[in-house]
Length: 158
Image (cartoon, rainbow, N blue to C red):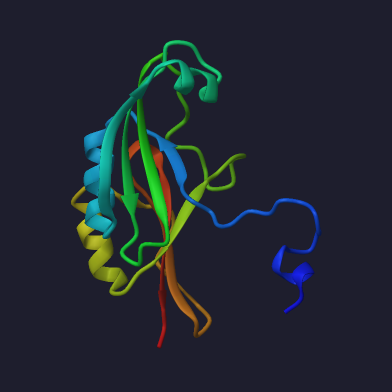
């Protein structure tokens, strides 16, 4: 492989190394954490963040936020759950449809989708539509979890 290919398609320009995490703002951090632990994510750590640097990064004044960093079992994906204590936010629509603007869902590959659904229902999850079969490839569905977060569950058909 030549030097150009190692640096990406635009020599001399920085490129990303990987996607590190996705952050979701929630109101009930404990319930959201429990939901994603039930799904199979591992709690990597919890912290309270605040101070001048946090304010500058967020473009807000007086930020105080609790965060829970969740990790997928393979160690490659991370989900940050954040509860802002200050300043208060504008709120969102937890029942927004799957085609609303913005990030609408986070997808997870699962095994035993029926069991996963049963376990998540115990945490208040509801199907958005139906559990459906996509050709001979996947069984999949959208589930609305805590704070209206939509997650996609996809089980590969073997």
